[in-house]
Length: 541
Image (tube, rainbow, N blue to C red):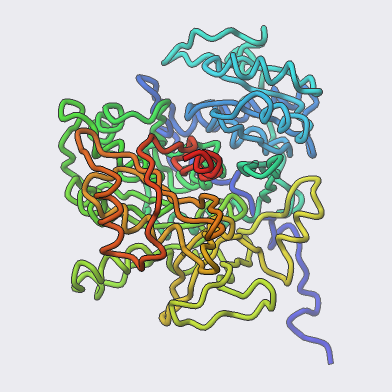
């Protein structure tokens, strides 16, 4: 018997359109044409102008024969050009590749070749590294020179094609291309590549659009938020916030450099309502000299990812006027895929219990269909006992299409119908997950598994510790033992013996670091601690 609800009820242009975040800009330009879409230094760009400039850039790219399946790479800071690229490039069906501005020439060259870049928009601030990368790369893209008019850079122009002049060639009434299929690629983001060449993570229009709805709901955004760009837009496309903020007709406040003085000034002057970032952004704000700080009279929502900050930092941020929301995700999940949804009853708990709730990664994001912790060998769910370790896995519409030109890695990542994160965690009885470590960061000492995160949590409670990271150090007797790298707070002091004694008070004896190294802890441009570098350093410690 046929289903009557399917008979003659087919998809057609009137009742079905592929999802895409591109439509958000055209709608906001219609609903709020004169509202400020972008603030950059003294520049103010309205939504009508933002839409017009994006269409002009799209048209200019089309005139260079850029279209579906082509890659446009950008080496840009958080500037208006970066926001315009997030719309203009997919408006012609091309794929946006945002390059991490902290990478070395060899890795950039690999990415340009792997992505088969046709057009490169590059900021003069990064001319030196980009010139070296282009010399190594096989591809010869059309290069567009971007010189930030608000903050001019002294770097060499790598092209005679100026960004603004290129834009001027375009038609502000350009009829941009709606994706024929929401599964079409919209962007390309590369993983860090700490164990070999980076992998190219491909996002689709559907996932990007759904992330926008989820972001707005999860962060409590209503119409006209003011968003400070502390999170690099090259990182997971800024967790899809370049599209999200536009969807709710918000104001993008560009921030070329993440520095305390500029952040405080912008938060106060522009009445910023939201920002995102890693705990390094919190540390930058809290550790700023008094003459750079400003009193914040309104509540600012701060969405933070990476490792949860210690309780003292959470308390200090709250006192400074920030409302914190802990998120967790990966490049492969368009950025945040879980949220620590706060239960009001938890606020009445004792401080230690409350802190234990805060550091959990939480439950699935609104746009994610499945989140679990499984034994990666048997693919069975681990018991929800907050103790049994397993691999955190995801499934749903905000999981990547796969890895570009890497079928083997894609198949491995999706084995058993779930995306394997490589992160180890536990499931709590209430359904909230908590990370315990990356699978490669677990320290196996004398047959015992030691979670580096657990050791770091104890270290972070020490009043002199600003940053820390624990990695495995080879050991003839035990195989490997914990080695702690500690970065002290400005003006603070501590000895190795003091740190070790502190750990003994909070950890089982076999988990206590045997080696303490006082040094600046290396971090990525997004604030993540680079443990692969520390593992090499630990061999000689």
